[in-house]
Image (tube, rainbow, N blue to C red; front, side):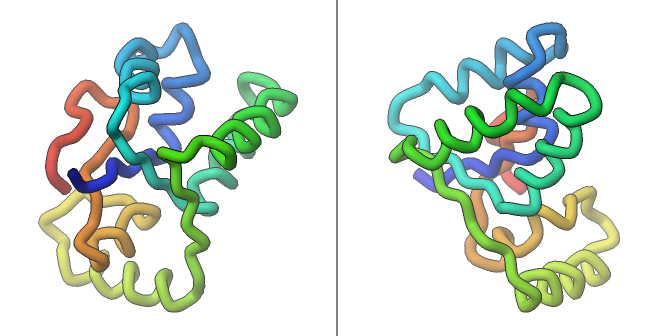
Length: 123
């Protein structure tokens, strides 16, 4: 099974019990046999969000948990990833992909997991 991609909205839904799809996000984190990937770009966005909304003290424990979770991968997105993602972003005007997600598409990418009810739908 391809890994699922967790973007910023997924983590916000996971951490905010008042979010409309909190239960869905929690369900995916609790499921066995699912590998989840994200990027350091996404985690920077989550940290920024938490510093303004839910409390920055929640960020360090989140990242610490992700780093020890064997199902979870955090990819360092480099400038080459940015350039290839930007190229795909411009080429595929018909899609609503975020820049965070694009270099995974280039690498036979994972499916979406982004805090919305349609988790797991193909990119």
